[in-house]
Length: 323
Image 1: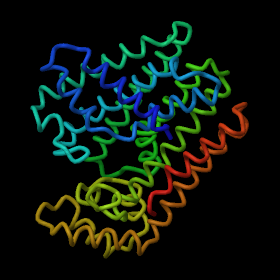
Image 2 (image 1 turned 180 degrees about the vertical axis):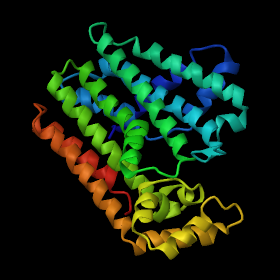
Image 3 (image 1 turned 180 degrees about the horizontal axis):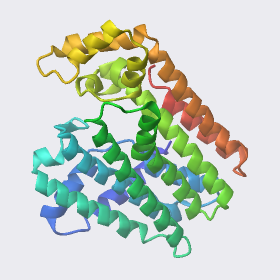
Image 4 (image 1 turned 135 degrees about the vertical axis):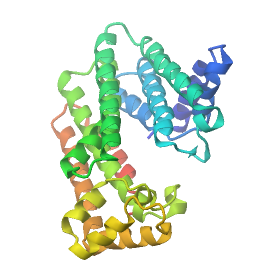
């Protein structure tokens, strides 16, 4: 993860950049969202990858900040589409202001990300832009799939995995690859780091789905069972539907899309059904398989043993979240 000093530097640079724009009514929501903090996971990965490939922080920082701004742009617009009331314990932008303001400020944040990325070294900029554009489109594709799933009744598990790959893991993968590109790494190492991030991102999201249902609220930081109440078609639900008996499925159907159902009863029944069919353990095994794929992708790279060790430790920390 980031050292305290580097984390502080990223926060300072984000704050300085976002406040460099004087049109306060447009940029105030941007500044507000960034002020809510976060782990800054993606810029951390950009810098980690640059370090691993022999680069330096100053050349990786434009890409690191651009990735973080893009990530926050997606959060701002996703909150609108999900009608989410809060983020990180504070009102979402569209609630604090209004939907139109959130859309426009999100668009501005997207453009600001490109402005930051353009500060990268000119020799690496074309490759960085190509990957950034590809990733931005893939994230949009993932969000579109997620919205489609809300009204579809034939979602398959491979489709679900592809959705979370696009919506979540490609940005993690791109962050790592952009750090490597900024350090002028060879194509083999760029691809190895991309694959590492892609598989680790899938593992992370699968575990996040498990924690949403079975994690302790005070430790996870969000309401337990939120995906169940929202009738999200996660791996837990899709696989349970494949394994449950007819009577249990009828009860599950009764709760699904039923606004009059008692929320506590719904969460208790669905979570119990998942456990009775062993799907909770299946998910953890699947997440672990993607973690192993992530680690394996680095084995044949030319990254130093010490740098590999830092990535392995990072993966372990990321996946060790009270399960």
